[in-house]
Image (tube, rainbow, N blue to C red; front, side, top):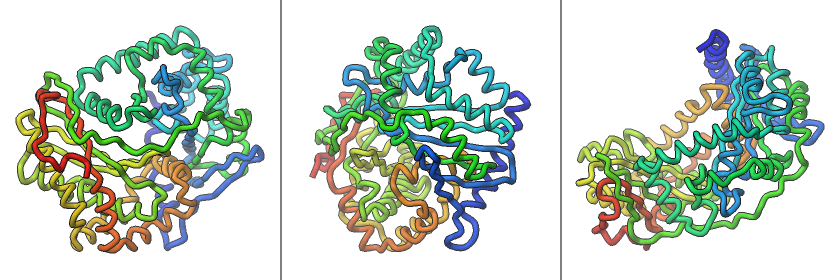
Length: 453
């Protein structure tokens, strides 16, 4: 790491602590998130901290891989991977050198519902940093040489995934659960689709997706509101006013009532499981969130951890999590175990989920989960990057600018009856298992409760 990079890393840690204090310290109502609207009409959520000279910006455009052409999965991922590979009058090498010389960190990534990026810079370099970000989003080059280099990197990663049981289990689960929906396609594309993606596909994607009405922005650091207005409009003000998004239908997970498998010669099998969830804006979401923590969200205290690892030593880790998308809500979990213990592991997981649906958490489990979830949120706010990410996610989820102040109260308000009702709704609709490992497609579940209710 060069001197500038080391300096930036140290400053990042410092501003994380300072901004954490600004966001969560003090009495109720002390959260200091400013809503800033630029002259071009772009909304930004800002947390100011002048203690250290660093600025972090996070942004998210609706779209993601759900906007890929049906016959070319991977376009969003490929586009995101190319946005730091030259822009405007700077080719890939020149762009990278400018970033490196000023210790500017910039990355973009694609998910199923969004293209999300972040940038960090020293305050003294903010004009150059935001100028480079403007070029990346408004004038990406997609030159042939870096395009083929990035394509080769993606292809190499996809090839490795064909032998990775975790990747295989995940792909099979998504393909099975959403067979005729964009969510069923792999975000990074396939070995067949990626070679067919052209520079024109990437240009078309950026023109459709990168727009002013389509972006959520969070800024943290040594910058005032007036400067944010100028800098943000410089980057985003020249984008098209409206995105051209293709409609994506809401969808319910499809459950086959039997596991899907892939046989692969590795020491352990990976098991992925999940089913219908509860949407983020649903009134029962927080109660379900607490119930899931009891089942599988607590890394060392959950029922799944206790039954699968502590009592039987079947796996090193096992967890479940609520997972919400714009057009579907899920809960998803995973574990890895020896090939000869897959059936036992699956049946225990299914039994614990069924019992949680039927009985819900105990009063003691509920109290411990609420205490942990209320206090641990600060761990999501211990760096400037995490805070900026939270600011964006709060906008994406439409939680309101005062959510951090309200969150503990929402958790505390969950009663035992609330948690039991939410657990029945969340975990009582059946499961879909995907298994990749030595047993693979030879696996047959013995417990009929694996089938949807």
